[in-house]
Every structure is written in structure tokens, then in C-alpha cells.
Image (cartoon, rainbow, N blue to C red; front, side, top):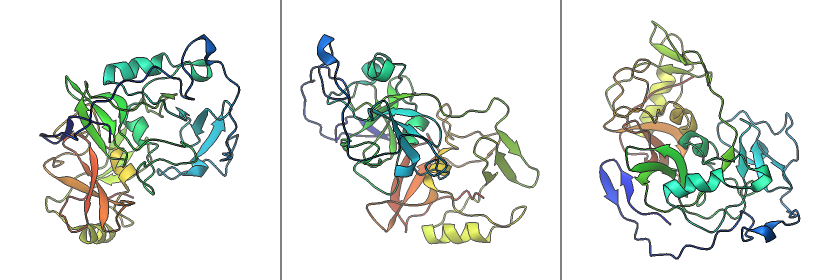
Amino acid sequence: MLWTGLLVGSMSIGCGMSHLEQAEPVDPAGAEIGESSVRAPRQRNDALPRVATSENVATSPVPSRASFFADHDADTVIDARNGLEWQRAVGAELHDWKHAIVYCAELPLAGGGWHLPTKPELESIIDDTTFEPAVDPQAFPDTPADVFWSSSPRGASAAWGVTENGHSVPSDASSVARVRCVRGELPTITERRFAVSASGTVHDKLTGLTWQATVARETFIHDAAVDHCAALSVQSTGWRLPTRGELLTLADESRALPAIDSNAFPGTPSESFFWSSTRYAAASDKRWIVYFDAGKSNYTDVTAAGYVRCVR
């Protein structure tokens, strides 16, 4: 894994990356950048759809092959769920954070207009059904199992990245990592996003989900967390444990301790994690979790104890 200075909570974990020589700049197809980089369209055998249809506009927050369709001679893919267009193949070079931003801004692929994805944008292509790398292999072939930069800063000298297994972590901005560029923007809402009910629920106008406003201060193992939501009767029934992707929609990278809108979700604990219902693809006894100290995600054993915020 090509990553140094990994920050988890207040601990710094060195991953022992050996010194690598920086490769000469190459474009996403592997050709050296310069006057000779014009090339014929490549042929691929993975046959992604060429246009968006009702069949490949997925509603699930978890992407799948049906979520993507190809464009620009298959050098890019478009996520039919949100309209984001992604660089399909990535170059061999590594970048520190500032150079990663410049790389995407100057990328000439398919007419330019690219940017380094934000943390939510990069998390949106994580496929929880696979790992190393945790992205769809047909949409993003030959993706290296390394860490990828986002454009989202974390403090004065760190920024967010997403690892090969799909969890989001902040790291020192001078570290080097991979880059996959994007163009377009995730949907936003200009009015107040969260509608707080006196009955103890919060409706998210952006996602359409309804959440518990406040949570129990007790912790649960995973099976007990599932049962807790199933038995919840705040306002009405129909509650469940959220998926990893749903829970991450509440993480606010502009806030910390907790990294969530405290007006909508008062008293959110930040000293431990919140459970999701999403199984970690590499181990049936582990589930994805989200920490609201900073909004990072990871996975842990189902026998661990964590907080619960239910959704419907």
C-alpha cells in the first residue's frame, strides 16, 4: 500500500513505504504527455453500456456495473446515479496532495475540466461488495490496490484519502498517493438540508432519508444494534440499521468532534464508532463503521461495541 503517515484518531501509523522514484508524467492511457500523446481510441472487452437507461440508473448507494456507462471511447465512465464523470484508468505516477490537485486541473483527457474529487465524491464509487481495490473492476479496470487522494483538507497539513479497501483516512499532505480525477459535482441543496421534527426525527431533504435525531448513549454489539433499530418506534416503525454509504452522508468534513450537524443531531458522541449494516467484503464477521470524531470509516468485528443511529 503506497501511503505514509496514516492518521487514525490521534495515532500516526507508518506503513513502511519504500522510497519510489517518481515516474515521468504519463497520461491515463500510459502514453507520455507531450506532442506525441495523441492516440487512437482504445478497444475494451468489458462492454459497459454506452448510454444511461432506466436499467442502469441504480438507486442503491452502493455502485455496481449497472451504475456506470462508458463515454469518450471508454476512457471515462459516467456514474448514472449522480452524473459524475470519472477518469477510468489511472497513471503510474504518485503525487503529494498539492501536486494531485494540479494534476487533475491540468489533465487534458476528453477535453479537460477535471478536478481532484472531494471526500464524498471519492467515497461515492466505493463498492462494498469487493476489496483490494474496492471499486467495480469493469468500470475501473486495473485499479491499483493503493490509497487515492481526495481534495478535502483535514486541518492545516493533512488531507483525506480513501484506501484500497474503501475506508477513509486523513494523512499528511506531503505523503504520496494515487490520483483518479473527476468532473461534475454531486447534487446539493440550497435550502436548509435537515428538517427537524418535534417527535425526535430528522428528515434529510438531500437523500430522502429520515434519521433518529438523538441516540442512546449505550453501546451495542452488531446483532444487538440490528435488533435495536428493528424494535424502534420513534414516530412510527420501519427503522433499520443504515448502510455504510447512508451513514457517511451525515459526515460533515467541515466539522469535528463531532463531524456532523449538531443542530440537527445534538449530543452525537464522537469518542467511539457508529455501526452500519454493511458487511466487510473480505470477512463475514466484520462490519463497516463510521467515526463521527472526524467522519472517517473503517471496519471492525461484530462483537465490538458501538453506537447506533437508526434510519428509515
